[in-house]
Image (cartoon, rainbow, N blue to C red):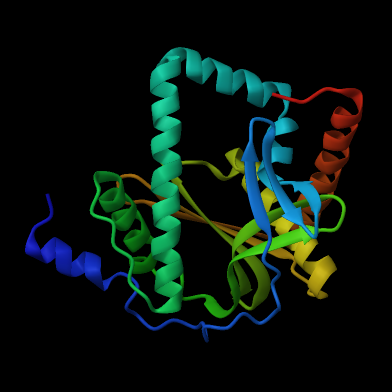
Length: 251
């Protein structure tokens, strides 16, 4: 239960003025998202495109599949599903709070998960990880590469002086940099789409991970390393469509 001081602090989230004018720099098109048993798709001008996360999930390495299966076996199916669902809900709330912060708006959720998410969002803010964000082009904006894929990026703009995709993550445990290649590949997917459709030159991805317990991890990829993630992403797209053509659906 929150006391009065906790509530005052919680209400303060999102009240600081940040660097967004309230209008996106680009004319981001509204697209419809559809969740189905086969994965998430986006309907763009009557063309249904798989989401970035659907493609990443369907093209996981055998090693990644085995690790996930082993974790689910250790935890038990019911508990594993609960952990997954709680993490997804907490992440959604944290995203809303951080988006509200950038907009200069408040967002409050007094459920148990909401309070956890509020603390995790506040940790990102308090530890100065928004300071290098000097220009915001758009928030939670839909992006797509015609004929191939679509998705929604948390933030696009200028971070540490570079055109960047910025992605917010939450985690129950500390994550080493070498464990999060798929996070950078996700950023690269959005960068490739943004560059193609809007003529930008995004060559940087920023991952901000708020960890339960108070730690915040900031991982940045740019230059040749980020270009490698872009090429890796395009390879995963090719793999996905080969699987679809052959009837292999992935995990």
